[in-house]
Amino acid sequence: FRKLIKERLLNHISTRIGTVTIKKTADEQFYLSMQLGSDIAFVKALPKTQSQLGIDLNLDNFLTDSNGSMVANPCFYRKAKKKLARAQRVLSRRQRRAKKEGRNLRLAKNYQKQRLSVARLHDKIRRQREDFLQVLSTALIKNHDLVVAEELRSKNLLKNHALSQAISDVGWRSFLNMLAYKAYLYGKEFLTIDPKYTTQRCHQCGSIMGQNGYKKLTLKDREWTCPICQMHHIRDWNAAVNILEKGLGKWQNPKIKEAA
Image (cartoon, rainbow, N blue to C red):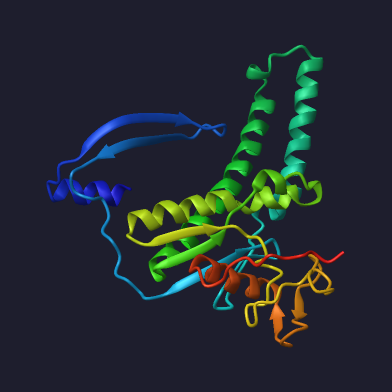
């Protein structure tokens, strides 16, 4: 951002400053955000690469793409969970002690010191996740003309209490939002498609598990072999290929009679 402003000032590019917002975070950091406007675009459209990519988001790996590449899930919250839990226990003890002694929490120095420590840990996790998502989303948009992902139903996923913490930690919704606005900025295309059948479908022959008496795949089935064409699949890679093909309109959802 600083580099952008400096370049525009040096080149005497007219830039309007609209809303200016100053924000103070829980760890007492101050951030300035500015709404800028100009008749000259802030970024230029990137050159076309003639490359198209489908991505499957999952918890085992952050994503698997249609070329077979995988990006590991960094699990920032999970890695800091023990340290954060210890810091929060100390904070809780100091809070109880201050209340027992009748002291105002705003004036309790040890409590405030520990509160800042906990807030900084939370902010570190947030910044790590933000940096990871920004770098990855920029790389995908720069290197491909079209990126296709599945629509996320985060609210439904979070109802699964066994997975809710991991889903919240991974930041899928933020990632898709980044892909959408960066595609618009750089003259690329980003699509989301209905994920129905993308996991169950064999991209080689188009047959779908769960019909014709064949058992439907479960989350435990990380690899499988198509009973029709005998093609061996890595589950997430196959799903990414299907996502790309669906985004390109290369296959239609058949009328399927689910297996009993």
